[in-house]
Length: 243
Image 1 (cartoon, rainbow, N blue to C red):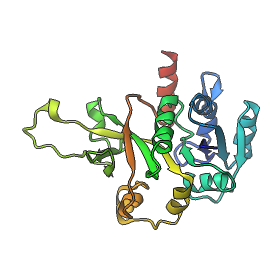
Image 2: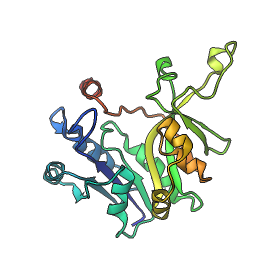
Image 3: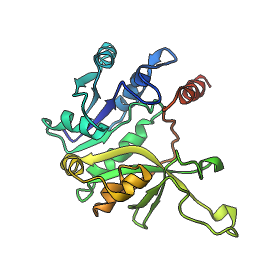
Image 4: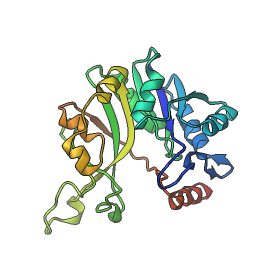
């Protein structure tokens, strides 16, 4: 296989337990994510990687391929590694199980970026910030890139810095969309990278990649998405879909 999508779906969540099974207009959230991923043209297969039999049972009921992984995994990356280890595949796209509004074209962009350039090991997305309130929101991760589209830094702070007298139209910020693609080989490299100083400071796992000297290709997308971390986020998604 050239590319697969893996959806890590952990039942336990500090802020919202069982959120992947939360109902959104008659379907569990994980089904919305899976259906969107299935529409991606560049994925040969989509697998749900879960740690709970309740999630597995629901996913199998709506027809998904499911792998029940160990509960002890510290991150979604570790869960993905367990799934892809025995598979012959070149590119793996990590699709968050709490992103029910993910657009299939976003997934295709990440997969295609890696498939078309053998020199890349990791890719992700960014979107131009259009709502002013997101600029200084620490929950919205910002990213700056070099002229070739490789990440220079990710931060919860507003980057880059603009002096107070900078014209408002000249102030451009990009937020990071947490959709990742990796070559299968690089996933195992990533697993063995030590937790970095900046990662601990910003609480952003992708910073360990940059600190170790690896490059992350960042591609701009025009699509918006809403990650579900709280019941309030869930209601925002329901309202968006109702409209």
